[in-house]
Image 1 (spheres, helix red, strand yellow):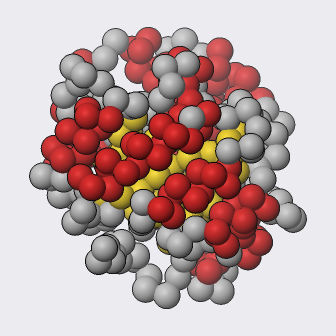
Image 2 (tube, rainbow, N blue to C red):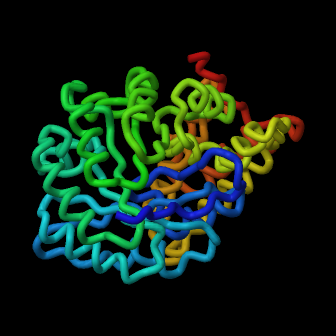
Length: 339
C-alpha cells in the first residue's frame, strides 16, 4: 500500500500539536476562537454518531466546510456498525478533510455501554474487523485512531496496537488512562512510550498536558511525534503558541489576566447568542469557566463564586473582580509534572 502523508505542521521541524475532539466544545466557532490565540497543527471535529439511520450532522460538518482557520481538520466518527462506519467514512471523504478518525476512547458511560467509543477496547476482534473495512474504504486519505490504554485494565493494549499496525493506521492519538479512569488518576506516559516503540505510525500523546513545560516533558519521556491537548486548552487558549515557543527554546510570553477577560467576552459571543435564553447562555459559559477558573485563582474562590452566579451581570461582575482589578497579574502557568 502506498504511503499516505499527514498534513504539514505549522512549524516544519517541531513536533505536532492537536486540539483534542471534545463533544459540545470543539465546534466551528470554538476552533475559530482557538485559532485567534494560536492554532494547533491539527483540529479534530466532535464525533459524528454513526448507526443504521445516521446522516452527517450539519453542525459538525460546518467545522469542515466553513473552516477558515487555515488548519487541517480530521473528521471523527463514533460507532460500531461496520457497514455504516464504511458508508459514513466514504461520505466524509467527499469533503475537504485531513483524514477520518475513529473514536475508540470516549469514556462516557452512556457511550461505552453501547459498545462504541471506549467500549470497543473490550473487543479486539471487533476492532480488527472495523479497521480492516475502514482501511479498505479510506485509501487516499489518512485513517487515524483516538483511543485509551484500555477499558478497565490494559490487558488488550498490545493486541490493539498490533491491529493498528496490521491495518496501516496513519496516526494514533493515545490518552494514557483507561476508560474507567475517566479523567482521574495518573496518566500512564510509560505506556504511551511503549506504543511509540511498537506502532509504525506517529503517536500523539494525550492526557493532562496542562502547560508548555509538561508538553516538553511528555515528548521527552514518550518519544511521541506530538501532543494532543483537550480541557487544558479551554483554560488556556494560548497553550499551543506557548508549546511552540518552548519547543523553539524561546521564553513563554505571559498572558495578562485582562486578556483572559477578553477571551471570556469572546466565548460569550457565540453565533447563537442572540437566540439563547440568558440562563442557558450563562450555563454554557460556565462550562468553559470551569476550566479557566483555577488558572486564574488557585484558591478556588473564582470557581466557587462563578458557579453560583445566575445572571449575565452577576457573572461578569465576578469575572471583573478577579481579572481586571490588578493589571499586573498574569495567567498562572500550570506547574510541570516532573515525570
